[in-house]
Image (cartoon, rainbow, N blue to C red):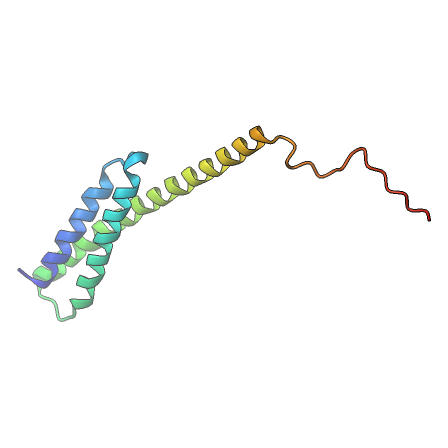
Length: 117
């Protein structure tokens, strides 16, 4: 097994994990798995130093191609997560407004302050 084979394996696991559609109920577990795989890749990348053989160069090129797809999918996941967080925040605000509709009232109607002495 060459130095890049382990990196290629982890990259493929990450690619396969992100390739599938991720339902919102499973998103937390998928994010944890992605985090673990990224950490493994980081550790493996530290061990890779030149010079490279032709076979290793070819594997490296494939890893770079898969990495581009992985980055796109992670961006999509990030956007979906941001959108869901906005929706939850909006729902919380809506619920608060429903339970106490006069919470945001800035004026104090009916109150008179006499400024003369």
